[in-house]
Image (cartoon, rainbow, N blue to C red; front, top):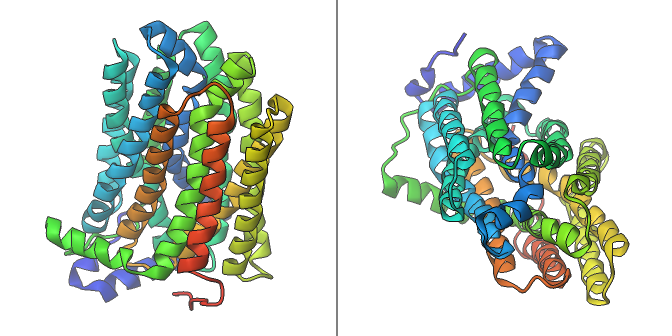
Length: 425
């Protein structure tokens, strides 16, 4: 049953609705909470499924279209670009019309774009189709984060984000395996048909099992008003400090995602079907590290915990660069990649929760800006790696190390631990 759209009576009424839904969720059966987290996790997994499943096929796509590997890398950059820009659109829409209508539209367009990718006849067409696919896919992540802010208190949010990482982490664990074997058995086009099937399943789950958590509002969608609201968010040093910490850390992982197929398959001569073992191992590390903040936040302050993890991640990135610079091979590069990617699993839920905890009524816009900056950073690193020579692992390592160091520096400047905020309830 949909909640009454009494948000039209004013912001305080919307807060009452969200608080009542939180009480209903807390009083409900445990399986309902688990089901909700599974659905929200699946919504956030659209990006991972769309990216990770086709990574093993990138060298094959380059050979099929008779283009250099760097040109196929632009299909990844276009996805990052679409995923970044689309979130800025879906955030205000979700705050204005509620959470579910934009989800329906986004997932439906995503399915159509998957069909276009599967039928691509040139790398240029595939780049455009991937852009549209990303513009639609980002609805899931934006609205899932906003739903978490709607339904859970600021103390619960890190635990919920960590639980969602368990669901999200399944995608990078299984997707490269599935994509690698589908590449061998059915060809790379079957990968995009499978992504469309995933979208159809999630659409059915949203329709039948996800309740509306936001009744909508009278918020105007005039472009100047939207720009003004985003400018206010950008002017919040505390918010931006945590957003940049998450975005730049995540950009290092995007650098790994973009460059690792070429580095592992072409340079280190790992078979395409075995690439998933390395990718899956890193996903296990990502999932495992994501559970640490949920446990440690009971005893330690979240801001200082985030700082400790960021320091460790920056150090791992610098060691990775030193290893690659010295000519290290597969078994010296892979462990440092594992550490960096795993620590990203601890950075993301902690930084996201610290950033989102201050916003309730405009959670959609805050979530959108968080996602836009994360994937905007991904666009930058994917573009940089697409232009750098790919004769060794140094470009990948240099970009990863730079992202880790920049994330730490931005956090120290904009949101130092001594300026601890008072959490919103």
